[in-house]
Amino acid sequence: MKKLLLPVACIISLGLGAFITKIVDSPPITVEVINQAEKILGLDFTDAEADSMINDLNDNRKDFESIRKIPLNNSVTPALYFNPLPVGFEFEKTYLPFKASQIGVVNLPANRDDLAYYSVRELAELIRTKKISCVELTRFFIERLKKYDGKLHYAITITEDLALKQATQADNEIKIGKYRGLLHGIPYGAKDLLAVKGYKTTWGSGPYKDQIIDQDAIVVQRLEKAGAVLCAKLTLGELAMGDVWFGGKTLNPWDLNRGSSGSSAGSASSVAAGMLPFAIGSETLGSIVSPSTECGTTGLRPTFGRIPRTGAMTLSWSMDKLGPICRTVEDCAIVFNSIQGVDGQDFTCMQAPFNYDGTNKNLKGIKIAYLKSDFERKYPTKAQDSLSLIVLQKLGAELIPMELPNLPSNDISFLLGVEAAAAFDELTRSGKDDLMVRQNKNAWPNAFRSARFIPAVEYIQANRHRTLLIQEMERRLKGIDVYLSPSFGRNLTLTNLTGHPCVVLPNGFRMEGRPTSITFMGKLFGEAKLLQVAKAYQDATDFHKKHPVL
Image 1 (spheres, rainbow, N blue to C red):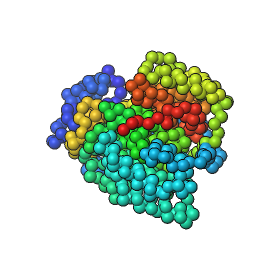
Image 2 (image 1 turned 90 degrees about the vertical axis):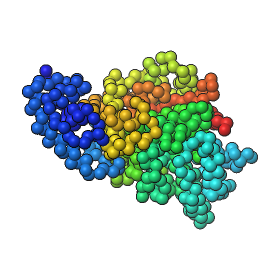
Image 3 (image 1 turned 60 degrees about the horizontal axis):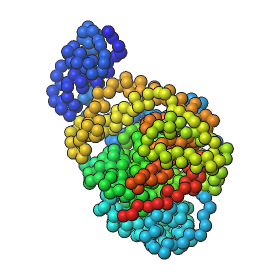
Image 4 (image 1 turned 135 degrees about the vertical axis):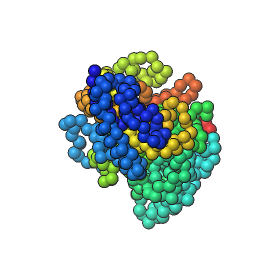
């Protein structure tokens, strides 16, 4: 019985019973080959129907072979691109100036090492009041990066020459009265999937460990314009998965027997350990949320389309997002303010107001939903998450129970695998995926190969289900300002598919001393309200002020 049209590419791969790297001759496509392919895809064609496909399939195989001769750089985007906006979505129209919270007098600590855990806001005040020079601050953090990297393995390249050059320029500008703002002279690190001229951009992977990309990523350019000082290119799990890279495993500063999680491994580990005030990470499916949870940092995963990804490695065109990993919510707001907005090159990027007001601590009248069934279930950090709800209620917020849409978000998560396989198509076909560190069933090499067998029709159908998911999430979020979720489970997959922003921040500690986290979820392009609510919570707690002992 005929179910649906069998995708041509899948038949060819399945019928040959081999990966593209293994194709040598091009044996004929027969009815028997098609029948074998049907079994994997759960389809059923008559022999006559299969026979009628053969000419088309052979022609298409020739087309595949032809286009594979034309190299595609990882930066080449598909003609189709993802838009997270639901039908009828309207952007906020008013643009207001960024308002950081007021800060009192900030002095240098009696113990110089305590400077390692100052927030961006505090360090900025030290620089503005000339209590420390940009070069002094940069040397301080570079020395720490060098001292502890052998223990935690968070850096791929320490960009000392560039950092001192940028810090010297920052000091010279201050001398002539040119102060660029809150990031002027502030050291930071960039996940090593962001290109930086003159330095290797390794993507954490053996096949690319000597790769040099002759450009600065847009985010790197914008941070330089804001006066920030790039001190290190930080580790990422190989090709943005996990915390294992070609040089080893990045560790959690709270527990050296555990990895940092990832894939923004070095970004979270270095900030948590006081090696840098902030770092840039990325998330496709948990790569800011997970290491921030594991290492006790505060991470912002922005709305899809908020920050241009130009100059960043592509894993998934429709799910990749860049964002800051910091000590505090307000630090995230400060960094985000400097890197968000269109660049004219990443066509998924959209312009929208970011009307953050860090002086507004009032949660009265704020409606905060929480995922009722998730909070009610038994899980290891239930006590900490329940206390978070109590804190918000005491701050004056109205708590409203909510549930996620009952739609197949997990069932369409294979979208990521398909796009990643396309982004690294030539790696698979060349056989160089064998040079990657991890080679188990859950690692990228196997995922890339498996994704070759996902039909094009099913990929399109999954994206249509994604549209329904976006529309339903919009309906669920009407009448609320933000919602609260445990930092695990279906919420993570669902909101990475819909493109919604979140802030993850520490909300307690496990019995063994490792930090726990809670996730604040926002509306599309609603980072200002999201950050203001998360900041009010963080200001009422002190978990972010605790630090690991190295």
